[in-house]
Image (cartoon, rainbow, N blue to C red):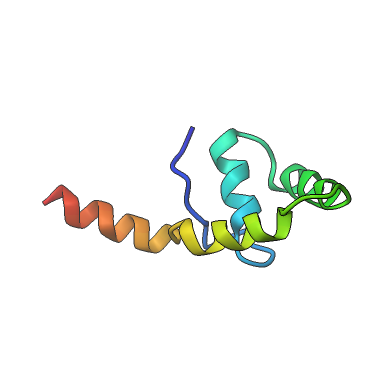
Length: 71
């Protein structure tokens, strides 16, 4: 499993589904389908997506932080 970050490549909107797909080892397309299907059910899916968009670090900023912490 890789780190939970929003990738710079392969994004559709914010990269949340692509980041989750990388983290759990499935395709980004499958994660997007799961998200769209989950939106048909009642619940706070859009709020969770927005929260993850805010809380998940961008891939570039995560690398910069890791490099800074390595020193």
